[in-house]
Length: 110
Image (cartoon, rainbow, N blue to C red):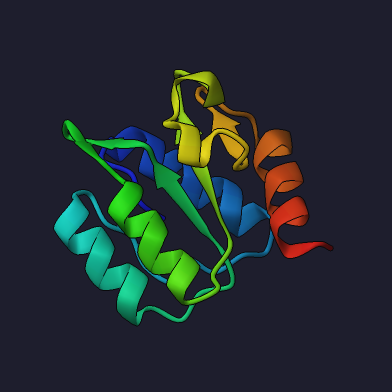
């Protein structure tokens, strides 16, 4: 889970726990996020698009290299993503528990 807003992180952790998920790790900046992307054992990832003004796309590239599915979380929607990421799953902010569950089921094909 990559998110730089503490309240959103706490909310997302609660939602994931309610869904029976275990959070493998979290990061608040791109440096931490890249370390997680390269070293964490994870079934899927949720990436905030903007981490303190820095785009999360290098982290997304690392996840692709490791075949870890992910979703972008953004208050701006997928229309504002670069062309490379336009068709990638996006979780709208603010999100509901049902939206998180739906996107994770889609990522994990359950």
